[in-house]
Amino acid sequence: MGQTVTVPITLTVNGKQHSAEVEPRLLLAQFLRENLSMTGTHIGCDTTSCGACTVIIDGGSAKSCTILAVQANGSEITTVEGLADGDNLHPIQEGFWEKHGLQCGFCTPGMMMSSVALLNENPNPTEDEIRHGLAGNVCRCTGYHNIVLAVQYAADKMKS
Amino acid sequence: MIPAPFQYHKPASVAEAAELLKKHGSDAKILAGGHSLIPLMKLRLAQPEVIIDIGSIESMSYVQERDGGTAVGGTTHYVDIANSSIVPTALSEAAAQVADVQVRNRGTIGGSLAHSDPAADLPAALIALKGQIITSSTGEHRTIESNEFFQDLFTTSLREDEIISEIFIPSESSGTGSAYVKFANKASHYAIVGVAASVTIAGGKCTEASIGVTGAGPAAYQASASVSDLIGSNLDNADVEKASSKAGEGVEFNDDVHASGEYRAHLVTVFTERAIKLASSRAG
Image (tube, rainbow over all chains, first blue to last red):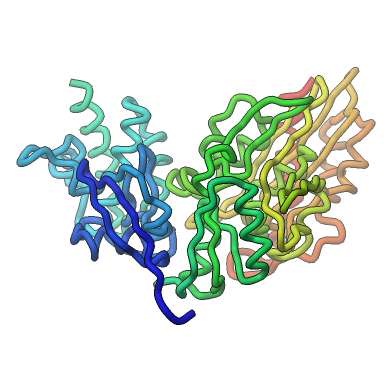
């Protein structure tokens, strides 16, 4: 292949525009972590399975380890860093805090992004809908029970 | 894990994509959602020198009623098929059961069909619904019947210069019901076995039937022996059981860490029976 040809991209991440020249093979997860230093987006399995790298792209949740940064050119992206408003936690962050929705915390950013996408689409999910909505996120501390409680907490909070 | 380097093209239309594909031939791969191709590239099982990204061609993503059927654009995401009220039930039900929310937001129907993963959900639904795959190459379109499309493990009748531009599903006859049911791997949600059925009932008898099976063998297939048994029957329990017992006839069953061939053979029978019963309950 020889020389590396870069491609210009512009993405809006958490409301702020970022332009860069990237190699086409750069994954979105790497772009966020390495180019933008937003390390809240975790890379867990790196095989589209665990969901730790979940971000919201143009309103829908997606696994950023399986998307090229160039594919996301022109998109609006929300990462876990974009949830809090200054010192005020987002209701889902507050829910994970109040309901002890994490243990080691590795899966938490992805869990929260999937939860936010779910609640944006369905503000009153049943327990079953929450569990199905989080089917693409794996927690190895087996904290699913409290994660569901955290999402329910956030749903209640977002209604009021 | 990082893919090997490649040249990146982002054509603005299918015609432009077809030109690029013709130019680069076997060095090139089409990228739509990337949820089959990118994992392979990260593992370096695929190392295309040229990527042609059709994922942003807006005119390729749609679900619409047309000329006696439903047309689905090649890059339509699973989520849009799952949520569609106009595609036949077996297809929306299959799309809704693919992997997880994140994958359904990005993966595309054309990508799934072109990849022909032996455990993919959509091929079974497409076969049961007698769908057609419409391809585009430079200055040409071709229509491939779904039962001739899936040939072997990761192998289809798609030519090297062709792009799946549309999937067309003929309208169902009146009195038809369809369904997709699967036995999923609990971690990946891939189908260990998945069965789609379409059943037409008139005057208390089954007049038309079609059954697509995935996960069982190297590629999705039509369970022809079961279909022959069903047509003309009253669809009572004994008829459905007898027909279902033939759904694995002639199949070389996959045998891997997820399920033995023997177990898959059993699952094909059980899930064919469930699919026929669910489709029948929606028919007539």
